[in-house]
Image (tube, helix red, strand yellow):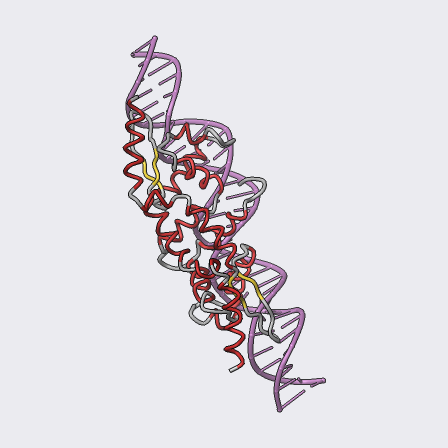
Length: 111
Length: 111
DNA sequence: TGGCTATATAGCTATATGGCTATCGAATCA
DNA sequence: TGATTCGATAGCCATATAGCTATATAGCCA
């Protein structure tokens, strides 16, 4: 691993777990407490809290407080950074540009 | 981890490493051999090969063969799947919708 | 105060990951 | 053929991660 890690490392790593993606999908509908978030899963509460910590570390969520509850909500900026990185490849799939690219690469090799 | 893993797990996990993202960026310009791909990094050849295997397993690249060379090229479909997943959150950042969302959540709580 | 509810933290285990060196296999070239 | 080049594979190590149970902390309520 590199000495210093890029913010996108943590973002994409956070997105690589299905439980965390489901949590994010839920939070897209509005903020939710830990109890609410753990509801759909057959996982222990500490496990969910750990996932939330990963998401928070990646900047994908943030937490408030409401008495003894710690409602989490989405932070869209980190998601946007990930989206922006992927967007650079858009033309490669959008316009079947990958086929064109292969053709160009093959053509260039001949010259 | 879940018993069966979603394809997106591997895709996002592959994207979480800066070396692999750099490799993908390079491949966006056209296909390249292992020797060419390892050039920008202070990493051993087997390490690069391992990264390539991760990318291939995630469906993000594919390999051809040209004599004893194994040129890799991008596979845009997997990238598109990742993009599509993230896109669902677009309105959350695009139109400052996260602020509106918070307002709605707060309002709903009052009723 | 005492007890209940909501969440965090500690500490353990098993597995996955990223790095390395050493070595093998296959194709090319002299 | 033999040497060289390109790349894959094996095997090792250190660290990170996902899960668990047990326990601690903090706020609310009777």
